[in-house]
Length: 328
Picture 1 (cartoon, rainbow, N blue to C red):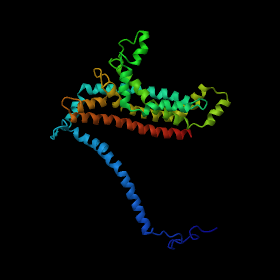
Picture 2 (cartoon, helix red, strand yellow):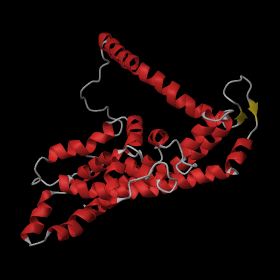
Picture 3 (tube, one colour):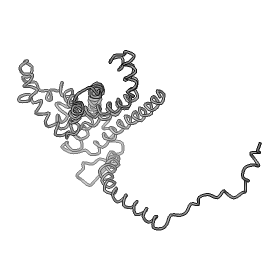
Picture 4 (cartoon, rainbow, N blue to C red):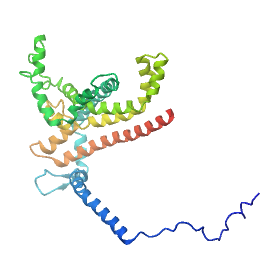
């Protein structure tokens, strides 16, 4: 038996002769640098626009939250955390936080559950024209949100809107103003929001359903399992990791309903639909004397709320990966 110490190469022997790594020729190095230069050149418009319209406003909002400034005069008086103290002590701010959370609780469960049921139906290969139905349900997503908000004002018009016309034969359409009543405006806006972005959540669920092996369904049918049993014991357990991710994505999406809410209700009536984004907009651009410092402080606090949701999203992704590894 060979000695493993003495049979191998000596410690001070030269390395075995192999392929020699040669420096690329000068023309190749110049070509690589030229290609990199062209890549950065094509990326430059995106970098400039992203920096000017995304990064700079985010960084500037932190500075504006520490000053008192109306946006018109050049003078900016440093006030420290006074703007944050004013925002926290404003009852209207906490009212907008409450309305935002209520809006989230109305929208997120409806989008998740209804889109799941529809995705299961559209994922069936036996359904005729399922590609057509997928397109129809996803079509509102690509429609301009501001236009949808304006159109919905005519749809829910109590005098000449189609909703009032359909309900009038039942004796409840006359004078029914779903967007003009503080008791129904938020629920109506939530229903429109669910309809508008329903297709995104549906696509998430359809992608999740396609990860389930069809062999599991075939084996269950051979064993005599029905549709409800297949959904309960196969589909639902395998969708749990995706449920965490889709829930967090949907919840985070409900925090960005400014364009639809602004065009539909403008935060009214009587501030009943004033979510945090409209609250910030009102103080920054719609007040008699704009208070950009106050609005920036509210925006920073709103950003903290979104960051908390982002942390939950990271946790959901980690939990989803861990659950999938456990199942595999």
